[in-house]
Image (cartoon, rainbow, N blue to C red):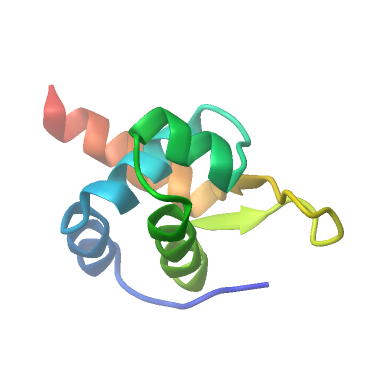
Length: 92
């Protein structure tokens, strides 16, 4: 399990500084997905998406659903969902 305790202002900045991190978090707020699915949607290499997932996981914004499968599914945590809602409010 990955988790870090940081302020939401710093997290907002951290996520918004990377297009891949921000788009991955938004997609995962809609439901669980694999790195391959995310890479296909965003037309990015899987390694870029995997790095973004690791960074988001380290901040407690996403988490793997299962560690046993080869193609691991990830979902947004409550903390990640809250941050996504903040982004959506800012975008309006």
